[in-house]
Amino acid sequence: MIYILGSDHAGLILGDFVKNYLLSKGFEIIDFLPKDSQKVDYPDFARKVCTEILKTQDARGILICGTGLGMSIAANRYKGIRAALCLDAYMAKMSRLHNNANVLCLAERISGLGEVESILETFIQTDFEGGRHECRISKIENFDL
Ligand code: RB5
Image 1 (cartoon, rainbow, N blue to C red):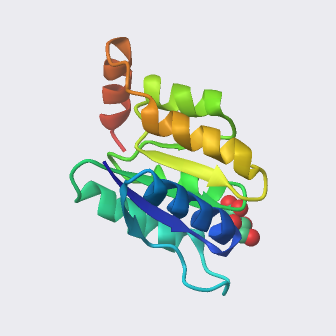
Image 2: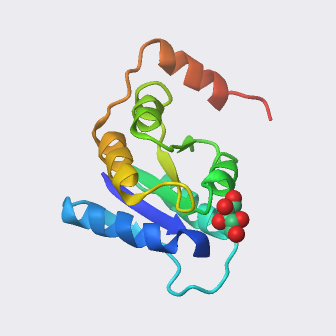
């Protein structure tokens, strides 16, 4: 699994933490994190990450902003992206089990590093349950927009 990372200026510190966490666990990453603390627009980074996920095999994304809200709203505009804003490990577990989330959105201004570590661990380790949830996800994919 390759993890593709992006954040805005309000997610830089957490972005660095997530990057180091994933590298320490041996994951390959693609890094679209901003290189300095200049103010940037979260949709630009959501776009970079989602576009890359959709053309990469076995890829998931992690998007971070102040609240995680802007990133999740932006990412979910992409067909094939299921972005979940997770504020605790239970949300991370359910986002994988039931929603087959392929993008994890995190909130630097809300979540502490200890919480983020358990969110990450859970998101990474939990497999999609399939079954009845498969058909529900297909219904979303088939929305006539
Ligand atoms: C930036 O100030 C902030 O609006 C952004 O990081 C995010 O929280 C938007 O949803």
